[in-house]
Amino acid sequence: MLSVAHSPDADDLFMYYAIVFGWVDSTNLRFSNVAKDIESLNVAAIRGEYDISAISFALYPHIAQDYALLRTGVSFGNGYGPKLIKQKGKSLKQHFKVALSGQHTTNAMIFKMAYPHARIIYKHFLDIESSVLNGEVDAGVLIHESILNFSPKLEVEAEIWDIWQDLNKQNLPLPLGGMALRRSLTLTTAIECEQMLTKAVQLAVHNKYILSQMLLERGIIRVNEQELETYLNLYANADSISMSEIELRALDKLFELGYNAHFYPQCINAQDYLIPTEYTSLRFT
Image (cartoon, rainbow, N blue to C red):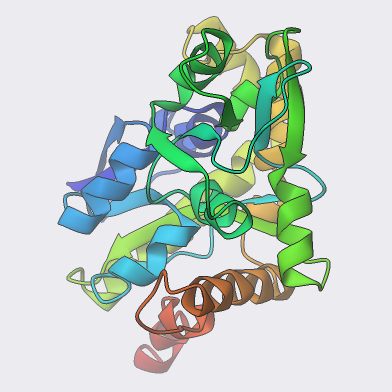
């Protein structure tokens, strides 16, 4: 039984539940799943707790020796992403206090590059909006479904997408999160896992309405039907099935920027850390 950890957010649930509902099966593999917020998953990945886990892309260089990077189940922003919000009419000073969703999240790393003097506290992502509203912090970065519907008392100070574009200067998509697989698994098992998860994401995307209704009927999703449709269009779409060349380039740029800003001890190339799927054809031919 292989442990799969994902977030309770609509896109992760959507992409994984094709397996839960039995749309994808394997004679060799069995999965157990757990849902936790993304920063809890990042910390668990550092500890090596799960066989397969959703992670923030910014974390990956820190766990690259223990986990391979999967091509599937990825979330990229393309003209959108997390939002830095504040109370309407409030001016932010250089050392403003901000709530972020976790030390290892991609939005946190990009935020730190843009606002090196901000005073950061970390909050569960569902508590960030209220922390800004009650004045505990001056601003906060909203992620996941929170970007769709927040208080009219708040306004957007900056889009992480815009900051990302200023940093990468190549109009690349914004790498947010993906999945990693423990290197201690055999290569044939790793390849089959990736194939099975890829098929699950593919089936989910191609049967979006049916699967969405099943999730809504069971009360698994935090958002309503209209918000779910919007959110899945953003983060669980055809681009989530398997990373494209431009998405790999974007990931390499994220790692390069992180290295240059001293977040990583070395600069890595994403392609070198993918599962070598050609192994199967070489072995069995």
